[in-house]
Length: 378
Image 1 (cartoon, rainbow, N blue to C red):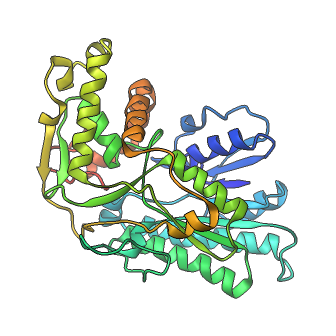
Image 2 (cartoon, one colour):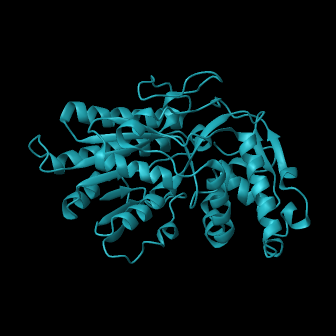
Image 3 (tube, one colour):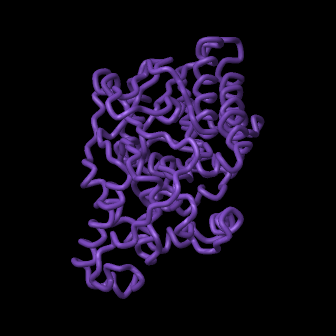
């Protein structure tokens, strides 16, 4: 198996999950180690038999073809992508390069090695990880996105992912490349880079910094615990029909402001239960017996902010038996506990390029955005 972007958030969780569930398999991770890719996120699988890490760019078609051929790759799981909406608004070019041209490079490399004479040499699969953002935005009473919902991307990020989805579909229908695609809702859990809503709120709270919430905080997302997502990908790879798309969601629709307040409450509870936390994080209001929610700050909404996302998971449930094991409450508890236990990881990833980017965009050298700056993507 070749996993692109395997040092990123979902990719690293998937590699750890897959090797735990399939210890006899060989997994090669290809990752360019940009700001959101971290080799430390793979520490649980480093040194295991069958695991290999390669630093490289998915746009390097020659490298990809060499890996597919030389490692006898029969399955590609494609996570590698630029995924931060705020970044796509500031600089869309890199999103087009990685998400569109990178996907094209992978598809062409797979086709050249797997189908030299127009027919697959054996049982092979190209699985593409996509997002519910390609479908656009929902009103409060609209039915959830299904696999038949027309695409209507509203950000450069979503448009680049929509384009990559179309390329994957085209390579199947034009060339017969065996593909599947999954469009997931908002993931959360261990190893998520602290520019996204949940980890940034946790880190900011621990450091006593503002918890910036866009607009009125009423933007609604469906939240999927990352391990539940990994289980769903596994079922699609093993039992999904070639050429099909599957929507994967958590069945947890929450307004952003409610998510932030639930995180605040979880941190209040954690500090009350663990007396070592006030000494470790003295700037957090909970260390002084005050509610973390006092840090919540409403900021100006971002351009083109989609109001609501929700996915209809009927197809993946009916065909593959996929349902989430984590509730939002249990997933949040696990996520908060993980960030409290892995302070060295998140402090390490927030040093360097992320701080440089914040400085360039907002004139603030701290790890978190200033109170009046745009909040993280959700």
